[in-house]
Length: 197
Length: 208
Image 1 (cartoon, rainbow over the protein chains, first blue to last red):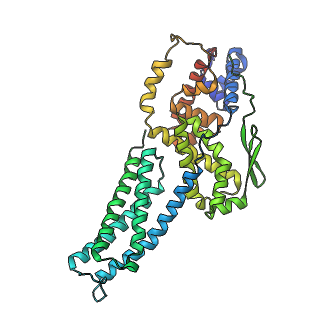
Image 2: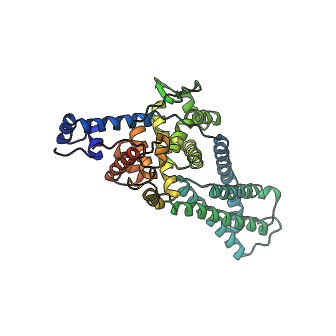
């Protein structure tokens, strides 16, 4: 090689990938050898930079999210099973309707539809959450708020039969759940869409 | 002009000894040991064990995140997201021993950090910032020597991420390309660019 090595060539030589010509040139050229030494020094300096400590302890927030996630999963399983059982009982012929409820065919369909919509949103959310993304502070707050409200709703749904709420109340709860789940899915979807070079 | 190696002793290191991974803080002389039992408990969802994992690796993750991200706040977000992901996915972790766990956690952190710099859309303005602030040798402060940490902040987000992942964390260009969803050539060119800029910013004489 008649010319000096470029930084790309020196990096390749450093990584053991350089051309034979570049290696021979570095061996013979003091300037390029010095430049390669500086490259090594620079990398050594980078590696020697001190380790950093996070200014704030983030474990409580991580823990809180884990616990909230587990609670949501539990309530989703328990509350959801109860709500689905109630809706199916109301929708099935021959089964005893909700105490005091006037079951009309249109309303039965509505309840079943709401159960199906909610279940669909649940599975959509699961598939989105698997592709975990970085969340900014505002989005994290929105998600946490929606999740909290869903947990509360699921809790009320799970105790629906025990406290004997009316069919209209059950429908209202299910409608709220669908709305909140929809908002949660949208929030997750938007932040996923926004990501990209 | 060469940058001297820092010798303030504030170096943390994760040492894998047999079946235990020891995080050593040379400065604070604290030790956090993660063994296979703790990992198994963490995989079972034990919150105390998960916290031990967090404590053992938080410095490593934060340092990586801070070196890649532009702000400390972003790095903290990455720290939080990384461990949320780790805690949620640890039950499916199939690696054996703390060594592979270190590699896994670092990879999750790198992925989150890269996602963060994409998400914040720094890249859309960083070219302009570089050109305005550091383009050419006619700038007033050309040759002004700054320390290495400051020099890192003068790199584009992408170049800084590549130089850190490749030269410090030991990732190969193929791995970086995969993490960034870019080509190997892109990773190589960013590394060259990073070194050229570091050389300029640090005031080293360009001999070649």
